[in-house]
Length: 139
Image (cartoon, rainbow, N blue to C red):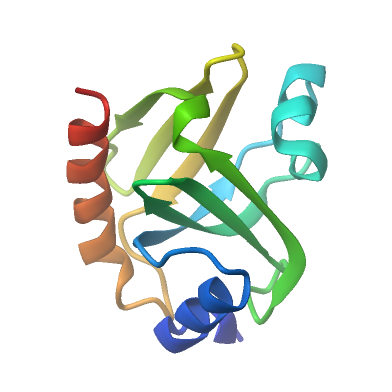
């Protein structure tokens, strides 16, 4: 269970999909069902929360979907280029944080990111790195 969250598997998948490894975190994309979200996130915009590994790099944000048990990656992935990102808003919570991505065309997506995740020992450190990256990104 949660085999896909092992760090070597995450790095292997990023390489397989030709994404530059950056700061990666595990998160749940909140359902929106809106037409705007569907235009931005395509098949990722549904009515059920979906687990993802998000990879932040200077080029943008890669979304790698996991199956519901996080035991494997699905073949679904998406990339939001940095020049399409208008803002990144990171709200820290006690256990769960909320990342809001707003694009230049007015689309918005919220992602829940926990501070700690079973089977992902890298999560806590990477959440801190991601928060620092977001601060520099929005300047």
